[in-house]
Length: 339
Image 1 (tube, one colour):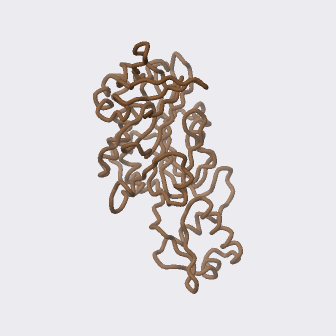
Image 2 (cartoon, one colour):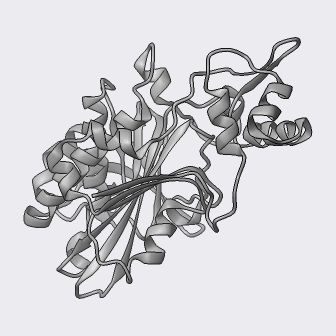
Image 3 (cartoon, one colour):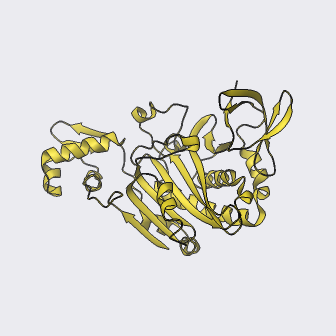
């Protein structure tokens, strides 16, 4: 496995923000003049970068007479640390593991190179995403160091049809990894939300490429809330939670969470390739956040109410409507709990 942490943003431009972040990582406040001297820039340039970090969602306090200080411990992603927290077997399995400072999207980065780079199990992470996306074209916002944006490229010899249910398998792997990190009671809201109760903790987006009848590949995007500042959380348009709230004291490090997610995910993908979704049906049923609950199925501007009854053998959502039970495909509709 090749592992790397890349400080420059996409496009190769130099960027002072990562260097400034490293200087702020100490526990003590540091003045603007000291920061300017250490970085070899003007105080105005320091102020500009401080404001940029704040815009990215990083809470930075300005203390009169002492300078700038981070309001929460810094928890940066580091490819070397993730590798150390992984097993030797996992390190051999991964094709590459890259941590970028800034990308448009971790999934877009893997998709750009999927055809030219034949390696399997390539992993991409980023501290900053300028165009992160979720299901059905929605954007995915993540404050700096407040979440995890991870994508993994998996190649399949068979075609795309057997990959039905893949997003549910990924959700199971993530939930099990969070169990390993001491975060219990993680549920899955069909087809791609990671929840605790009715609060969203993360999401999954699977994008397919290659030949429909094989071989093909899947880029699996995973987003998790780790520590969301209340100011940033106020802009989220649905109930949410993060690992810091769920841990009760201190959230597990992001590098540890990534290592555990990769371990569970690679194992789950191996099983899925052999046994399909059927091998995971019981585990999904145990974590199903919609089962036996009223739901509203949306098809364009039309809405139809029913009751969710678990998933079928392919991972489709079974819904009891007034005119009978039907399975709903994840590509056709959006589902909301309906009271």
